Image 1: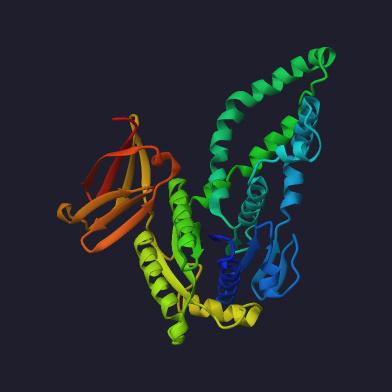
Image 2 (image 1 turned 90 degrees about the vertical axis):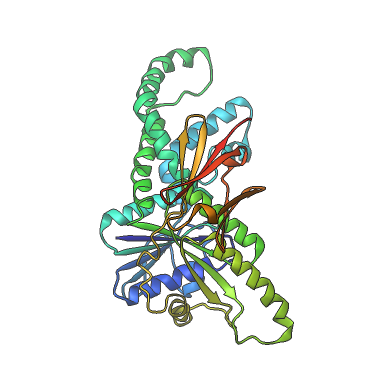
Length: 389
């Protein structure tokens, strides 16, 4: 079973690449599903077919689905939302503002991703390609089951029992709405629905993410941050795909400056994503929509490689606690002490080994800390971050 997450900043062409990856997978004989969890769906536009919340056959071995996130949210969160709305109404906050506060940012995509677990469990597909929303920040919410497990084990039974006891008393003393059993049951169902998603998506033998970007400074910076957070929370990235690279066939002097700019950006990508497979896709001279054109995209992107294979094995880094300090560990199996240089520049850590450089965008948890020391031990660079002098 393989799950391939295609993600990137809005407008970089991730839907096209997701669709092309799915077509190539299907034509290699894999039973494939491509599903969109992006609330602003464009998968149907890419295929030029009508798609909905249920699976629709596109070609042999390939189904497609555009998840109705509002429907999933209603199924999994409706009673809790209604209860919170009553509480906000009681407090004086009414209308649209109250409703907006009852749904946390990213929850709709989180429930959409829960559908991945359903498809994995069904056994109906060999490969699931997920066209994610325009940012992978929502994947950070997948740590929620770990947090909720403590609450569900320790506080949830107590809270439910207390509510049963105090509900009759408070109902006579105050008009404050008190959660009933339906609300608690919905929270329990919410937890059950999330349970297992992280196990699937954080298992690199099952799931890997592919970051799509254009050769532009801001887009690459966003991809770096996404790469950092995916690594921080235990999700494997097996490829960085640079889309819309000027092809060699473009020789018009008008594009000479653009070519030079792109060259610098491609060097930046090579430094930042040195641990993973890097692929380039040219800027086409037409809109790549429809099955035939998407097939061309898949052929040029993957060549003779099966897109369902894990394209690289490495993980960017890992982070460990060491007392009050935090240690960033980066694998560098061939580095020598004399070759190594490390510089912190703003929110990036720039590592140089011989003639090779690597830039790592630091997560928020490390931006507020300073580098205490760095050492190379058994092929691993260990950078210790601390707070204070």
